[in-house]
Image (cartoon, rainbow, N blue to C red):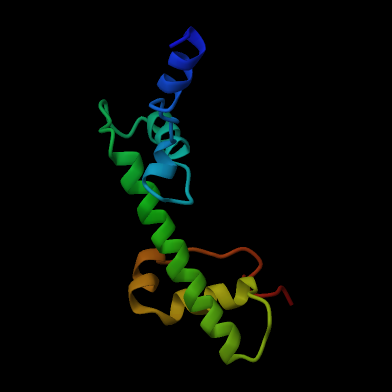
Length: 113
């Protein structure tokens, strides 16, 4: 066995490093969530699973809001989700209404007369 063959054999056992986002199968960046948590100084210590959990919760909330907004869009006979439909979807859902409270979604504020 030559030196080249032994190197090829060992490269089979090398593993590719996967990001925490990929390992958690999320779309929201875990590293970005960690950076925001650290820069926000919300706690002196930060668990390694805290940014993963935060990214998962935010991804779930976004999926839920977009699902409800898509339903509102279909019900109104439109083809595109608008800020007004997003606002309607949030305020028509009891749990999301309580969560978002009095949040203003951009471009939905009443027009000035």
